[in-house]
Image (cartoon, rainbow over all chains, first blue to last red; front, side, top):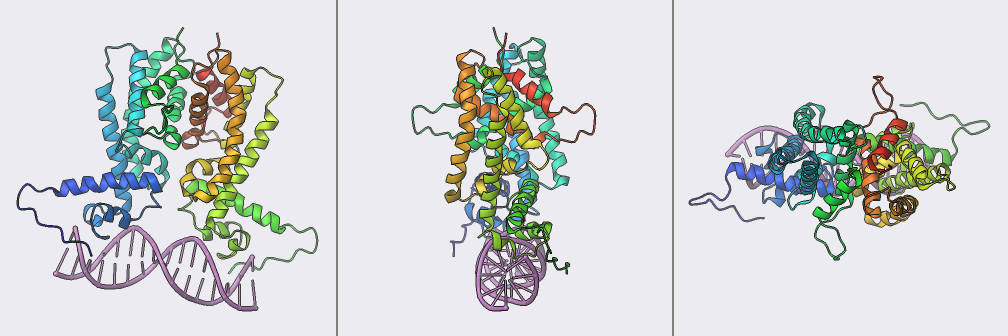
Length: 205
Length: 205
DNA sequence: CCTACCGATCGGTAGG
DNA sequence: CCTACCGATCGGTAGG
């Protein structure tokens, strides 16, 4: 029997919008840890201090919450990526920025949205997929422009479209093995990881 | 009300071992399609012509079936890989064989075991993980030997251990986007995909 | 957003 | 390996 939430006298700590955002953020963390099917609405509700039925005040059903998580991930990812690349720089430099930013999107604190998209994609009903694919296509297009240039410059030796799938695949897969918060001094940080990724695929002299 | 299975008069079509193997194979396909949590024991049972409770005659619980799927995948993968590499060849050629074989392990008909391991890893209880990790380490070691050589020869420009994680990541991630059975003539086959992967990372003159 | 609840599903079991 | 079943869980809802 949890304490009744106090009615705020002024400056509400939690507006409806905040509560919705709370649910998305907490759902992302739990979905990433235990999977969409492995996480119950009760888990999510209790993690934000609600009772079991209350999330349905904000989301029509569990799948819409999943979609909101993925949508938020792509929205944030697009924003971060567009803010990170300097279009005045050569393609090779922009490539470094793309790679480094994508590692951040996967591994920075609170960045659970994109991993959920990657690993619970098949749990999303088809009718919801359209919207997410549309956003994902925009993200891919940013990468593709730079990769096309690199290919034209001879710095990328594979077909540029396949290169995009393979390079993003290599980075995305780090979600399964990379752990931040280094315990041993040996652990690579994201800067080093990005540099190694660039070194692996870029055919500089 | 399904037909009673007929008792074979001779040459049993389904020995207990066959039925067990049937369950593993069908479970792999369903787990890959719908996920571990999204697949019910009833789904699996019915797909092999059993009633809902019968799989528990072969497996103590659902998780042991999941482990059996992963174990079978690694057993087959190790077998195929060891049969595919020609140790008398230069490292670059063995690398091509490794890459091509791994694509086959992911995408050949009936090869659902390893994708299940990759995408339902977090559904496997910790106590079962040890055994699978042991097999996976053996698989990784085969790759690492060749990658270490390539690195020493200057053909691989990243740290060899990270290169292994990134290259296998790039290939593994194809499980999310590659579809066999080409509809359009444009679709790359696994040979082409392997060639492109090698081209992407190998720094040949 | 809470209380109280429902219907369906699911992993697993007893006994044969 | 089947029949018959159970207990628990879970997504979702009505009414406030």
